Length: 275
Ligand code: NDP
Image (cartoon, rainbow, N blue to C red):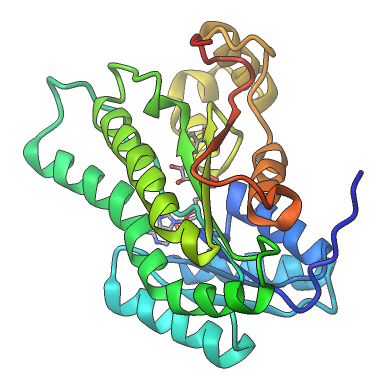
């Protein structure tokens, strides 16, 4: 494994209190970076913060409450990062969740909410952290240290009718990321994304707990996910783990990928059908 030392660099992970974001924060801390995470639920955020501090006692960690859909809260979060660390080198736009609905049962309001979440969870943090990313890029002098990485879904390229609004928004976001990469490349800020399939995380845990049939039958989490992986024809035969998505995010966020921008990595267990 290539070792990379991120001492002195700052990584910001939105939605870092659970699942993929939490696993990504862990990787950054392991590599010596200072890390800022955010989320809406104060309790979940506090638990994540204390878990991380227990595992990394020397951690330079900021866990701040912030809803990425609230421009004021995002600006305040960026202000806290500036005050605490004085810089930001890497921004991981991860916060969010999917919406299960077909065209028939998606209301106008649901469409607006979904488009709002998928676009503004990228637009607002990117806008708020750009000044710090710009300074970091200038200091990095072409080393590829300044980067934005977005968690996107394979639905962007392979839409599913039962997730019509999410799929459509994901495709638009892929375009947004490409445009951002083009606009920011002259400033040496790289912008990339990962396209995930199904990753075991808080949102899937909640779906398992809400599945009354599985609960009544006493089906274990392991059996439940294996059955779903079979039904969904995932070639690798299982859900992905948060750390597997995190490793791809880490690669794209750090100078390990210094010559990559406007691109994406597929982390879907082989679900993509296109060449
Ligand atoms: P989790 O539910 O485990 O984690 C989501 C994280 O985002 C939590 O920390 C949550 O905290 C935070 N979050 C959600 N909404 C907001 C918001 N508006 N503002 C700030 N924080 C927010 O799920 P995952 O790890 O799976 O999700 C990470 C990303 O991956 C999401 O964008 C999701 O859509 C995407 N994704 C996941 C897939 C999967 O199979 N797991 C598939 C495709 C995409 P809190 O609720 O306290 O705010």
